[in-house]
Image (cartoon, rainbow, N blue to C red):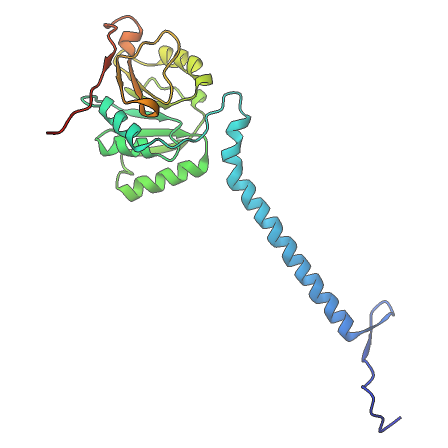
Length: 231
C-alpha cells in the first residue's frame, strides 16, 4: 500500500544457489569473516614469532650437556682481562653469549673469536662489536663447541657448567698447544688440571690454566692475584 507510515521493506538479494538473504545480513557475515581471518592471522603470526625467538634459548636445556646463557659480570670480565696480561696470540670464547668477553678482549688488542649456538645472540654480538668499533677484530660464529677444533688458539675462555668440564678438559688437553692458556669462569676444571693463577672472589673468581703445566712441562704453583690498592 502506498502512503503507509511503516519502515520500508528490507531489500533482498538472491544468491547463486537460489537462496534469498537480506543484504544487511550478508554484509555483516562478510565483516565477521574478515575479522576472524585477521584475528587468526595475528595470533598465528605471534606464535610463530615467539617460537622463532624462544627456541634458540630453550634448546640448550634439551641437550645432553646444557650450557645456558648467563651474562658475565663486569668484574668477571675485568678478571679475564687481567689473566690475559702479557699474553699474545689469538683468542676464542667458547659459548660467547652476548659477546661481551670477546669484545673486551678485542679492545685489549686481541684478535678474538666467539662460538655460540644461539643465532640471536650471535647476531646481537656482531651488532655490539660494530657499535663498539671492534668488528674487525671480534668475530662471532654459530657453531656447536664440540664440533670446533681449538688447536689454532693461544687463549681459550670458557664460562662453563660442572657437567661439561670433564669432557671439555679432555678435548682441550688433546687439541691445544703447550703455550696455550685456558681461562675458566663460573666453575674450575675438576679433573687433573691445577690452575696456575687465580683471581677474584665468589662468583667473580677466574682460574687460569697453562697447558704446559697441565702436561707436566711447567711448574705447578697456583698463584692468586692480589688486588692492587690505589694510594
